[in-house]
Length: 250
Ligand code: 13P
Image 1 (spheres, rainbow, N blue to C red):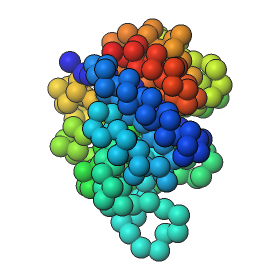
Image 2: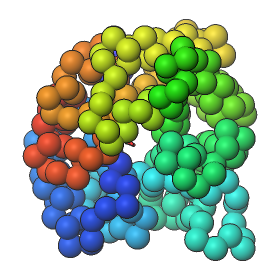
Image 3: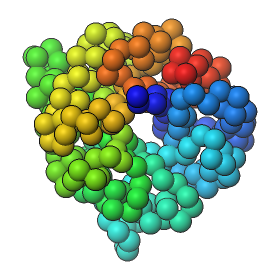
């Protein structure tokens, strides 16, 4: 039985004062409701203090990580740096990283490999843009993204990954994939994982849905057989909305 995950990706939002209040609020709630796993990915400068606030009730994730080990890469954050402040999860290959910062499938494969080698759980993002869905190519696009992201991931590594399917046309638009559209893709992703690894491993991997998840649609999405929770953007910035989504995953 896969335990659901509700993860909040704050993107480039919140000052420290605002972040602290939201983290404290979520931490209090999670202490009382621990049936799903809760992850928050705040902006990088808050990672260390956020980990202190959460202790280990909920987990903190980075929004990105470098493909390089260390050295002269101004502005980048390595897996080793994350580990040294007890951050053990990183979102990798978010569509905004792909479209706005030029991340390629190949780079994402390197980041995933580096994360797993360092004991960091990657939340590997995939998802098609609107034209790709309109032309019926969504499964081809997503499987190409995942094949590249998992190129160096062996069976052992696969036991420590999380996948997030985020159709780009549903991110920040208010437009959500229907539970049926999302389920169809999640099932296709699980089939791909079963083919590459084994059915038993595929059955253990959590596949999250992201793209305008809100309190009003979370329960319908999360009740689909292959949807194991959500990667939430906008609604994770508001304590009451995020808590309602956690409750839908519990
Ligand atoms: P929204 O929930 O704001 O659509 O964002 C989804 C997302 O990109 C999470 O990573």
